[in-house]
Image 1 (tube, one colour):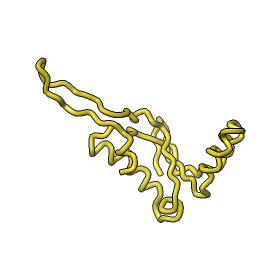
Image 2 (cartoon, one colour; image 1 turned 120 degrees about the vertical axis):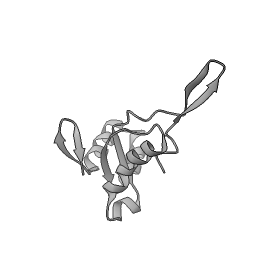
Image 3 (cartoon, one colour; image 1 turned 60 degrees about the horizontal axis):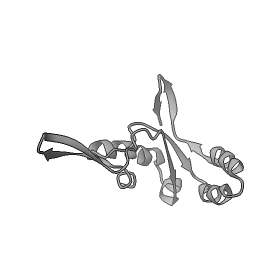
Image 4 (cartoon, one colour; image 1 turned 30 degrees about the vertical axis):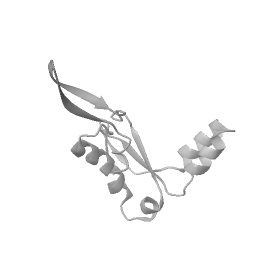
Length: 115
């Protein structure tokens, strides 16, 4: 649900020229990375299952969410600090953020990733 809210959607609208598709909101279809943070994900039993649901839920609901993505977990709650640090030291903040993310996927080849 958390990704369905910011994702736009396409709807079929009847016009005087016939039916046409209208997009409302942002198309997040090209988002390639989903990062999960928070207690439920960090301490729950299946963070990859919860995060990969973002892709499935949008596809089922018709939302313009990610079509496929790599998934990471901010298990140590580092992203908030990186955001604060980014105002003064953006390069340091980016390196810290990248270093602190736990990958939740495995590449099978041909661009196919699984958890």
